[in-house]
Length: 265
Image 1 (cartoon, rainbow, N blue to C red):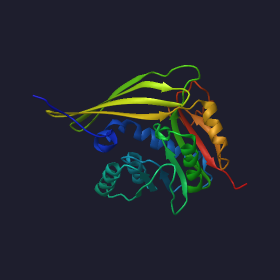
Image 2: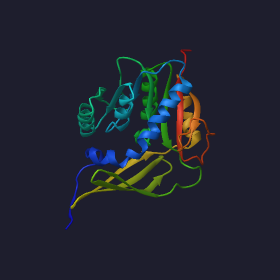
Image 3: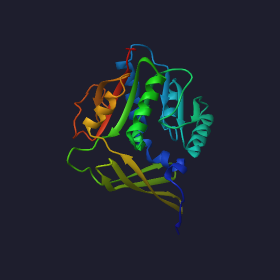
Image 4: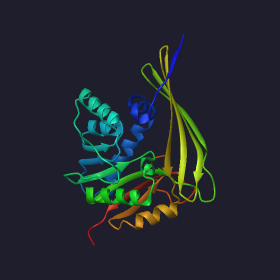
């Protein structure tokens, strides 16, 4: 007999399930970050920075490959989960609590990355601009920022739902995401998420809701133009194929930008 109960709080408060839900992305993202560093940095990359690192699945993967990592987040449960994981794997990384649009690191990073739409949690132009400025200040000259987000098709709608299942050992996690409303004037999407975790005879359910900022390619380019210390190198799609850059357009859906820290003007 299955025993079921509802979880309270956001899915970021339950990092063990959130981490399983996104585990399939870890290797292709880590491989692409390494490949982008080799392609676009004119020096050997050692130090990496991850804003809004969450459960640290990429921090752990890249630390295991020999990189020095720094990561921050506002979620204390996620940071505690990451620190326990690092200790268990006998890996080291600098972790701290900070906001995406207002942070500082002591030693400049060679490269930074932020993927799976995390950037879109910054709901105002001011916050997004502040984030890019902070990233630019955190990078050495010539360092890169790998930034992944969904663009909104101009004059059209994206698919309004998505569902997937991931398994780790005896735990199975199913996530259903649904776009319930888009405010085009404010450029805000309302998203609902349902997470269900099953392990043996136990079943846990969590319902959550959050907002994301929308971007067309023109709107993102305008934002990037407001931060002259960063320049666009190339654009990629969801396939993470470093050999196949793509054109920036409004039908690209998930888009991966490679930005570079410019020389001082």
